[in-house]
Length: 295
Image (cartoon, rainbow, N blue to C red):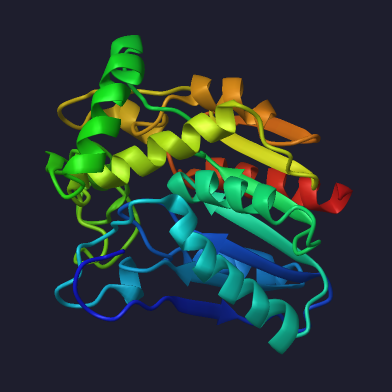
């Protein structure tokens, strides 16, 4: 659990007028929170009430003294997803629900949908550049993972990396090369420190997915057309590629999520496809629309 302060999560919502198609619940990734107002507007315009949860120790849920963005098991976040789904279905009365996850949120929501597969809580799963494997060499994914598992068990708070690097943050923030404004206390340009216990949790979750999940609802796996990894400084290529994750891992492991997985590569996309250049994000959202129209 995050160190210091009371645990909580914040659920934000935007109402459709009227909500004729049910609801969408969005779950963000690491070093992130929900600020993509245009995404909420897109889905409310199409008849969905839109909800987004800032997970414990992220964004609006981060409290003074807490270790930001830290858990030692991704299933800890099931509590927040369960609570959000309960509000959407029981309090707000929605019978149709689409679950949407970005990056680490895509990994977490996949595991949640697998564990809750007998409960009929969601009707579709939409993944925006899900983190399904470590973006590194074979050595790092094997020997490095074994080291992380050991260190993460005995010294979970050890900082393995001070951040994620500045390339992606500078590509999306309006003060640099992007067009988006977000709270830099909640989403620093270089991200938050990567702790051994948290990375151990991610690698354990990814290993579980690699063995095969049984998500029984239709799954859309969106990814960029290419990756541009390990750059030390910003270049124009950062505006048209995933600079955070390896899109080949999404292609390889996406089919392991469930019985009906639809893979889509969005050319020119950034890591968060919905923050890409306007024509690209329009196409990504259109792919989601087409998928949801078919389920």
